[in-house]
Image (cartoon, rainbow, N blue to C red):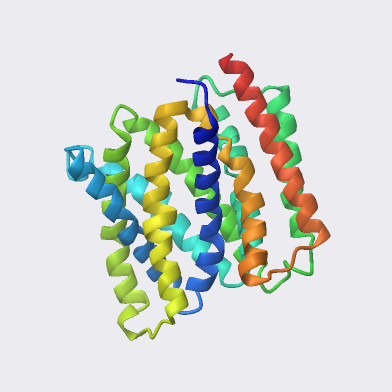
Length: 295
């Protein structure tokens, strides 16, 4: 892997902005669409650039190969369930809170990695990072101004959605010898297969009369925050490796909070800021331990 330059850092920042922008766009999408339909449209539009790339690079998709069940399971856990849970939760929770809650993914992955991998065990630095990060989330839940009895469950569901991403990542290790584009394209196909009938039977999307803003947001979520973001992630991984790409975790909650304020005027309380700082510090300690291990 080459040393990152200004272009690499610019791409990393751009990726963080894209992923962070998903949260306020999900909020806007919920004004007109149900959570299952949002999840379906997101994977439908998100599949387009990925499948086009696979076609252009002549990459064979294995969605219906002998390993189809792995793609189906990963599509369910890594896309269907979290996309639904986040969309459902953001209906009654500020999108900036969702950005902070979702940023716990590196902390959750460290916990699961300890139990399900042989080379990702806890050490003192990682343990400190996990404790600080999750202490910030507990503190966030004490903000009665933003999280109360009416949306407490919704906030928990968003947190569960971030955990699903981690579980899906662990399951992806089962097919780690396959190309990233193939895996992403195949799990997107299975996510579409799962969500299409659910959307039709549960929410009857043909009865919606969506606003222009919600329609633009849901298309953006698919094409940009899902499809383009995954392709950009591939490029960064190839050029600079996983450790460099993982630094995006620091930026997403910061950008998510800023963008939610700019576009939705969402309230930023003192507890939100403290929680945000705690989560970022926690991620820093976990990443620092990983960096030391690779040097």
